[in-house]
Length: 297
Image 1 (cartoon, rainbow, N blue to C red):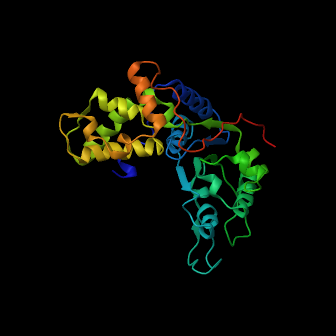
Image 2: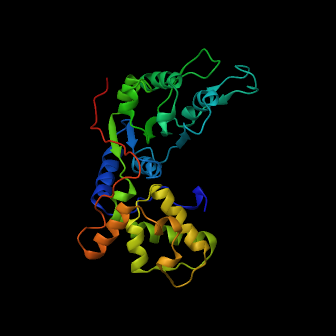
Image 3: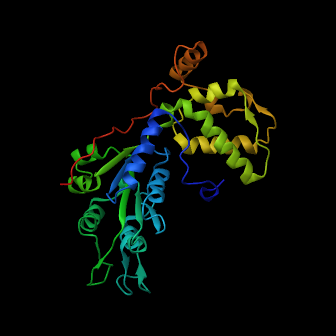
């Protein structure tokens, strides 16, 4: 099931943290302010960015996204700003960049924390002036593009260590939305599984099984280190097993059946009713700390 086979503007779940995210999306959509989205890998930061765009007055204009971590530094400036013919080896034609393509719409910069210091300086100038200058061009053009950035990094820590520019951080950190990890959304796991099982069944034209209560209990207690992305992939794997009827613990993937001691203890507590499924599981890795919004510097 590829990225284009599911809806990028659906935020599944009804836990308190997701209700808060929805409220922050609606609040952000009423403005044109820059938004910084924080959260671990796979939590759905791009979904949040697309929802802000879809709920805003710019919804009929382009939504343009780029993964800064997946684009080579030597190409990133050209991808964002465009270039003029002959400005470097291989520049055989004038080429508009993604920023120009996002004019009057929204530009989403994913994995911002992976950007080099040099590119951060180039981005800062655009963020402050909204003026675009293609590589090799003496002229600058005014661009009306809303900026939304996302990262799984602790940008405050990167600023302190000199890996991220403080001036760019304060420029981008106008409105801030933190997307919680799936292990803190235990009550939403069943709804998410049902949604992605249905998506995968439709995509592969296969029957959609149901999850037994025992299977649900195991999956709710699983810490989901890959978050929504991992859940979506497991849902697809379950569909491709072509299990008809009811899925039992025997049908679940190995990683969900071989938990850490902390997760095993949590499953016992859930079974005894001494802990709610949505209560926090010790994280498998360091989590992103949420910072309160700061003023533009």
